Image (cartoon, rainbow over the protein chains, first blue to last red):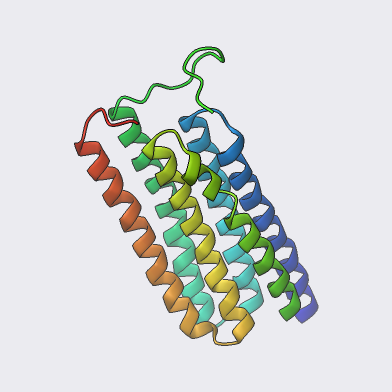
Length: 107
Length: 90
């Protein structure tokens, strides 16, 4: 039973770290603010859900697991909300999206 | 299993260094805020893993919850503040 828990934890935490790396790489490589926001919001949310879920499986059925579940549910709601708030502030502040590759390119 | 958490913590600490490029070089202030939020999310996971490494997970988990709430409130507050000031996308 413990070996199965360890295996599930290793797989989920490694996958979550991979998605966090993808989000960090996307925030550096993409050319526009809105595409960067897209990359980092989705990848970070999935990564933190996978990592906290893996730690929940490793911890077992206890009070710490319940606290981890509370943190997981809170982050699943808070991370897209914060990203959406920043993107809406940028849109209302007058930041234009990147439509073509030649004009308004910022790098 | 403890060494696995140590490896993941080291990899995550290296991943945290990547958005600092966008914070340093970002053309608008929204890019910098996005990078700061990404660093906060990754730091939350790093605090969880450090709690597992030290074996005192019950203490570090409360720190994780408080850090998550503070990160979210900080991001939303700065977004509302930037929303109240028009046309400062430099």
